Image (cartoon, rainbow, N blue to C red; front, top):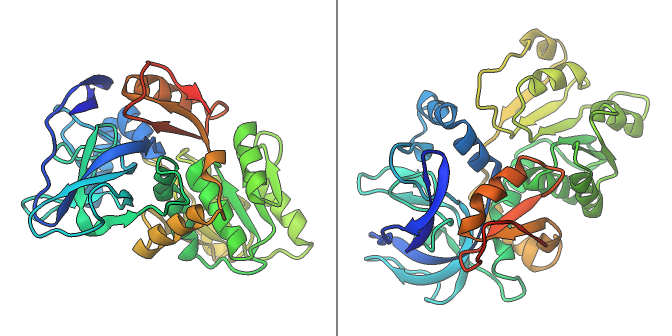
Length: 353
C-alpha cells in the first residue's frame, strides 16, 4: 500500500507492507485521518514521547524510532475485510473506530504508534473489529474523522465535576479544547471562557457558544471567568489543553478555592508545580488521557445529528505528500485548527478549506 512513512523524522511517501487482520480484527481502507497534537509531539520530541511511555509503564504508545512508522489514529474509512472470527459492519460500510489493536502477544497497541499497526497516514489500517462504529449517512465520512479528538474533550468533561452553572475555563482551543467547550456547554456550565492566542481558534470557540474568549497575552482567562461569574469566588473547572511547561503551575496559582483542573495537554518534559499552593486552596488536579468508550459513540452521534458542525473545525486538507507541510502549519496555530490527511489527494502542500 501507499503510505507516508516516518523515517529519521521525515515523512516519505512510498510503498509499505499491507497490514493483515488477525483474529478479531478488521481491515479498513482509510478515507481521512486527522493530525493530533500528540502526533506533533511524537515527531518533534520523539525520545521524550517514548520515555513518557516507558516511565508510565504504558506499552500502547511505544514504537521503535529506528524502524518505519505509519502514524495516524484519528481515522475514518470503509471496511474491507475481517480476520478469523471477527464480525462487524458489512464490507463497504463507512466506519470510525477506537484506534487500538492487540498484537500476537496479547499486548494492546495504539494504531499509528506501533510499527506493527500502521495508522491512517497509510491506505489501509488494522484495528480490533469491536472498536468500529458505522458512520450514519447524515455525516460526511471524511468529517467523521473528528470523532476521536472531540471525544477526548467530551469524555474528560464527562469525568469532571462540571454541571449546570459551573464556571469553566478552557485553555487551548485546538480540536480537543473545542470539544471541551462544547461538552461544558452541553452540561449547562457557565460562564465558559475559552483562551487561545489564535484568533482563528477563538472564533471557533465563539461559534460553539463560549460565553467569552480571551487572548492570554492580553487578559487572564481565570480572572475573566471570575468577573463573569460574580463577586463571590466559586469552584471552577479549568481544562488545560496545552502542553506548555509551567502552565499547570500558573493555573494552580490563579484558580479559586475548590477548583478542579483537568490536565489534557501533554507536557513531554519534566515540569514543576508548587503543590502547597493547591493544597491551601483544595484544588483537585486530574491527569487525563483517554475517555469512556461510550463517549466515542456519543460524540459520533453529536456530529451526525448536527449538534456540532465538524466542517467548521476543518481548516485544511493534504495528501500523503503534504504531511511535512501540514505538520509545520499546525505548529503555527494562527493558520489552522484541524488538517485532514486524504489518501487520494495529490501535491505537497496544504489546501485551505
